[in-house]
Length: 330
Ligand code: GTR
Image (cartoon, rainbow, N blue to C red; front, side, top):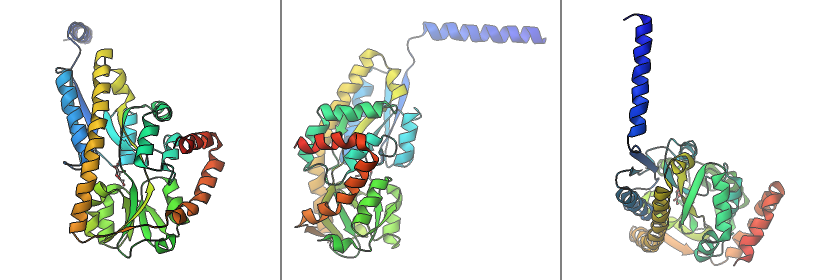
């Protein structure tokens, strides 16, 4: 073929491809979802139910799959991938979200919520919507809020009863400067690290401890290395079921409705499984010989957080009213 004929037939092929695409029904989409947790974890079960129900109700228009154990990347990386549409949805903790959506840092202020119930109330109401709006500006559509209980300190050295007991301990934190400040205010050394690397670091003594809720302390096997779990309950951080904006906008209104309904159902299921799962995990670590201690004087820890709040408000004066709104909602 000479060049002109070649070009013409290429044009013909592309025109007929376009005509075909226009005449076909909307293409089936494969959705990939990021999940940091292993099978059996409350969040995993809820995400898998979400995937199954959406796939079924959209009758082949969407095929949804969840990738567990963080195999698609660590959390900060997965947040970026979801923001740019390389991933379609994810369950994110609001901790590592702080560096990207600054409003969400308010949720990472230690002791901002007085209880898990308080957190639910706030996130399910008008204030929760403000956080969803802030996430939407960064291309993340938060459709519902999951529970992640209360996070407490654990370590290989000693039970923590007072802030002085944290002195000198090397503690892993999630990727957010606020947590570095939090641990340093207690006299510990904070090390930001990806979740998947903590087990090895605890085992080899690179870290003395970390902080998390019962289900993560158990399912990550951190309890195999850290014998002391102290109920500081310093952080109560909500998590979102978030959809990539590009994936969300590609849906028909009918499918958006289905996805939204299933996301809300998934959070209801997750919260229910969370209560049972936390008890089970607590029992597993107790049976393994972990020493769990109550912290009598939580106010001593709260007092140490005053400079953390002061610095945060100084840097983010626009967020002070949101902090007050949460505190006053109790
Ligand atoms: C878990 C949370 C994860 C992750 C992890 C961590 O409780 O569900 O999304 O943030 O903690 O400590 O990195």
